[in-house]
Amino acid sequence: MEPVEEPHWLDSDERQTWLALASSMIRLPAALDAQLQRDAGLNYFEYQVLAVLSEAPQHTMRLSEIAALVDGSLPRLSQVVSRLEKRGWVRRTPDPADGRYTLGILTDEGWDKVVATAPGHVATVRRHVLDPLTKAQQRQLREITQRIMRTTDPDGRFADRP
Image (cartoon, rainbow, N blue to C red; front, side, top):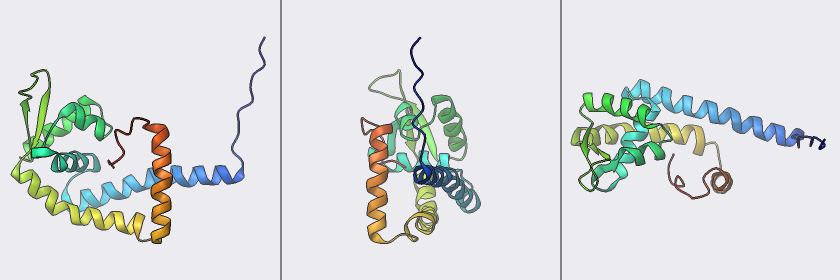
């Protein structure tokens, strides 16, 4: 019988670091979601979809690519896009380059919604993430999160996404 390897337990400092990060990973999305719900009638996932499309060439992207960028399943994304379509902010069309795919297209009304929503979202990001930190701490946070992202996203697909 092979010996069972003991887990490499966290020491006190590591545990405090992990708990602080884990708490922020729960509370920050909740704070962003609350602001978006209150001020724009959107949840954070819906806003991410609109924001991804707003930055895409011709405000158009395959739904499968959007799902990957916002870390959502295709069924979940499809439900969200249906809601956004009903509001007139997004429309779907078959991809002319490959009919097996569906494109999401941000409408002019969707663009207006992103433009109207972004200032409040940015203010919330500033209040909860940037303003409490010095410029040096912001750089450190960026470097730290980039290092973490390299372990969770080794291909760098999500490097510039929220």
